[in-house]
Image (cartoon, rainbow, N blue to C red; front, top):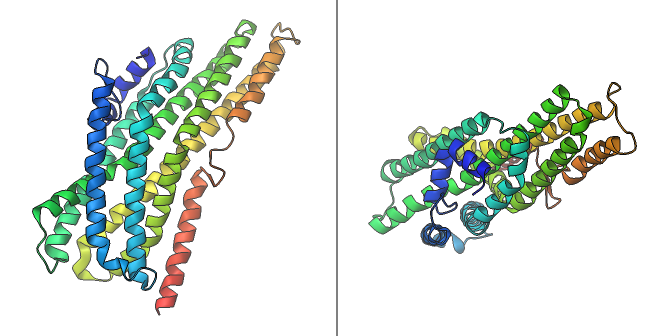
Length: 367
């Protein structure tokens, strides 16, 4: 492992332990094939639990699919969650370990050239992310258990196998949050380097560092583009899942709040909705931070290029900076997922507007 990856793993030790437990990332000194084997077993266990519960509890709705609105919405919701968790888990299992190796190999020279900047922001973000992951998953398990035993008991007794599969299925939802936390921590690492580079350019405007600064900025932009490319599928599935859940659960929450006997059910639905909003906001916020940090870096490089007090050879050194300035926006355009979704905090407001319009129209049709 590179020195940067060891530093990163030490800073985000909680997240790294969680990834190692899930078999998605190997620890220093451990065998990668054993980690892959453990991760494959974990994936199969979670996948079969999701499939078992989906088929068992959705079977009564299949006959009414596209005939009754409630049955159609229920099936769409359950299939979206099952597909989202399974696909993201499989992508992380197959790609994450090798992706992290390539990502940190690209950033390791930059880390050394920028004198090993502190990773305290990454540490705080990863710690908060792990706490949020466990809070969301365990609170859903507690709420689901209470609902099935007290608020909405079934006409038939639930077997121990079904309870175990339901527990595994609910815990597997952490994969959605885990993928977003990984993207945010890696994005925050890029932001740290962009800001450090911008500060070095401002504080040390030396002509001898022209080539170094231009080289670092180009490498950072290529690494950011690599991050966007590798996480496009994961982020797209996350955004679609969050959007569908917000549409389907928002109206359900209004109905549950009106029923005093469904307080815990309403709490469970609220947790799901808040989790969807948090994931959407984190994705958009991280994309905006990377974009803002790169733009600040461009402004610093332009200031360095146009510095009047430096003895600069216009035919070479200024051209190097100009090429770097052009390369940054070329390799790092707006974070677009397959040309369909532009990642930004504005995406959250658009989703909320659509959800509000959907709920209002649906309630008008009901009345």
